[in-house]
Structures are given as C-alpha cells and as structure tokens.
Length: 164
Image (cartoon, rainbow, N blue to C red; front, top):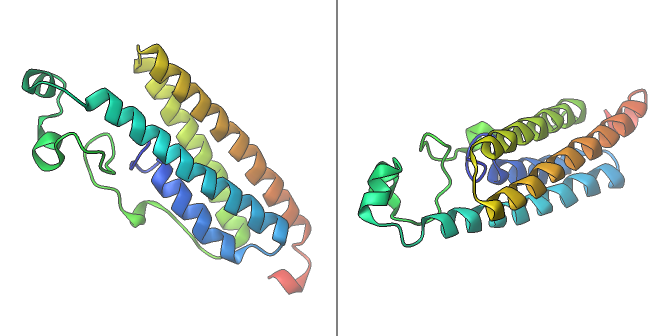
C-alpha cells in the first residue's frame, strides 16, 4: 500500500525531510526538502483514493474484499499499513547522515515506489484511480532523477574535506 507500506508516501516524506539536515549544500538540502514536501501531498492523494474506495462499503463487500480484519480495528478510516495490514513503522526508512548512502537509498526508494505503482496499475480497473496512480508513478521517476542529480553534486564534492 503506497500510504503506509515500506515503499509508501509516509515513509518517503519522513525519510527525505529527515535526511535533508545532513546535506552539504543548499541545493541538495532544497532537493530533499522539496521532494519530502511533495511526498506529503502524495500521501494526501493516496489517502483520498483509499477513503473514496472504502466509504459506504456494506458488510458483505467488506468481507468479500478481504477487508474484515482491517475493518475491525479501523473501520473505513485511513490508517498507515502495508498491503498485508502491518502498521507503518519508522523502522522501514533509513537516515544515515552519510549523504552518498542516503541519496543512493533515496534513488532505490523511488524505484521501489515506482514498482509498487506499476503493480497497482496491473490490478486497477477504475479509470479515476488509474489516472491518479499514473501521475504518482511519473513523479517517482522525476524524484529518482532529481536524487541522481543530487548524488552527482555531492560526489563531485567528495574530495572536499569541508563536507565529509
């Protein structure tokens, strides 16, 4: 689930907003701040989709859809869990303070999020959901590219003792 799963928007936003403090330049700090803030917007989009898909479900639909266990604890409220129902945990994100390690992690995280959205697109049949998920998937690709730019920037600074 891209809301609270290991590749979800909640983890992404907190990861990037935490990692920004270790970035050595204003440009790299800004990249993490901008993307982390955008991920909060994505969290809202995914939460809205989940809410719209689950509001007004009948007991029969809840049971048939495999939603009963979740429903017992959360009703149809939006709660950060993964696709198996495991609650979100900060243990699913990383912030090392090593800018190369963090930016490499961020690039991998964006690819995992893209793959998660690809999987959702394979299963989705609602045109409105598909359009929103395609948009989110495209933004993951852009974020991957921006983190690549940031990584190249800090790698160019590698020999400068001021930053390491």
